[in-house]
Image 1 (tube, rainbow, N blue to C red):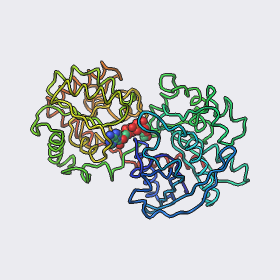
Image 2: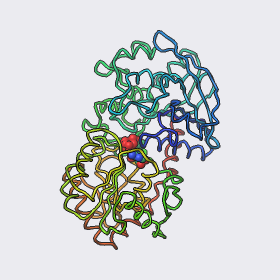
Image 3: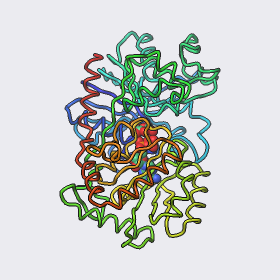
Image 4: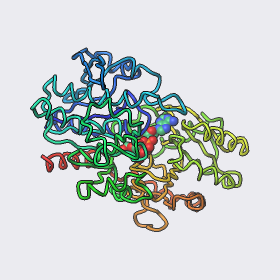
Length: 480
Ligand code: ADP
Ligand code: GLC
């Protein structure tokens, strides 16, 4: 099949979260399965400067209609591996910036224009380069207008650009909600600016467009597929999701075992596997040392790597200050995000000297060392569409502590409730729930034999993308 992915992140060129990993691994797996795969992303500065993109060639000139004016751009392409081509939709005014979506606390003012231009750039390229896709698969709000714009362009030009379109919701909390005047820039027929179209309480909502107009809609775990049909998790789009009924499926992400695999991980000081665990202690020592802790520390080391956002349950962690003051343990947290959380975490670290180390930065290599070196990995998310770190943690023999939501609930079994199959400790997504998880972690750690059983069981689970990629391949074939 000829498969086109449209997303705003792609590992290793641009990444702010799991979307980049998921799109890269899915596209790569499909390419390995001999499909002809193209991924379209914006030509961000980090992408154009990436050594792997150095050979990118200029392919097409674009002249994109944006309301009453035309804006120019161009497409660059390169091929990082067989069967895989990356298309960059370029326009320096929009994408030559430090970050993909905003500066620190605020989103860029022109994000509606930036991603309307991107979506139209994709559709124009499909037409001008005569790509004839079997499936066009768009991800999250930044790609969400593509299924609709594509069908409108087909009607206008009297041709077929894609047999089927698929839209994947990686996180329904980010919808691409903009002032209604942005609708004009889409050049869509006015009748789509209403309740059956993009209109959403006098604004326009890109994600709503993806959910309504793609042939198939997926999300990244079965549990999240059910959750987003409820008011609690649907972020106001639960009714729209319900309308698609059986067209919505939850397909669990996998992990890229070429990148996240302790037996080959290049970022670690030593490699290890379930059969040969000594390298894990080397990683633990290195992790403790690199944060100024005694490398011989005997108590449990808790790790965390995440965006510092409400979603990730930072408030629940902060509410458990007493645990970290009281217990003989360490917490090593790598993350960036909202200033209020950075400040609150710094305060917490000051109140618990010698116990909490913070790295408030984005650091791919460090994230691998935390995964490998910690004894437990904490993910107290309030909601989690899929979550990748709980799977990385199991692969790395780092017992995950996860709240019972979304993909976390689908991928971690509680070792106390289910001693025969447990791979982690799970709890309600509340401060008390996390307190209970932390308490049970201390008990588990005090029993090295039982800890090792839970750890090894996690390492033996198969979270590779193979299964997920087959599920998507099946979905594409069914829809065709
Ligand atoms: P989300 O996409 O909601 O942020 P996921 O669990 O799907 O959550 O994916 C997060 C990804 O981002 C993981 O690969 C994680 O290791 C990575 N990550 C998050 N924060 C950092 C950081 N500060 N440095 C390096 N990697 C990070
Ligand atoms: C989103 C979600 C996360 C998921 C990732 C990849 O960022 O927040 O749970 O793992 O997308 O699908």
